[in-house]
Length: 77
Image 1 (tube, helix red, strand yellow):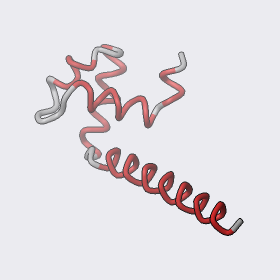
Image 2 (cartoon, rainbow, N blue to C red; image 1 turned 90 degrees about the vertical axis):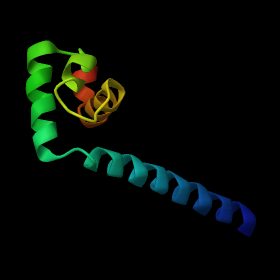
Image 3 (cartoon, helix red, strand yellow; image 1 turned 120 degrees about the horizontal axis):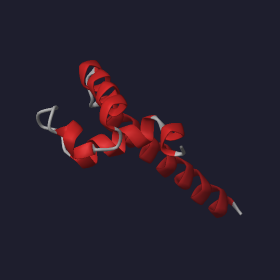
């Protein structure tokens, strides 16, 4: 039985590590980038490549992932 508890602990640690890694990816965006993404989204919607064109070094995929991670309720509309 002790073995099954150990596996559960490893699973919990893996889940926490994945969430921590995901959160750190969100922190890679500066406050200025976040503000620009929000303003651009308000203007052009989900045109991620257009938004990415305004933020040097960012891809449309990175911006879409950031937005959907941070603003899940916007995705559900």
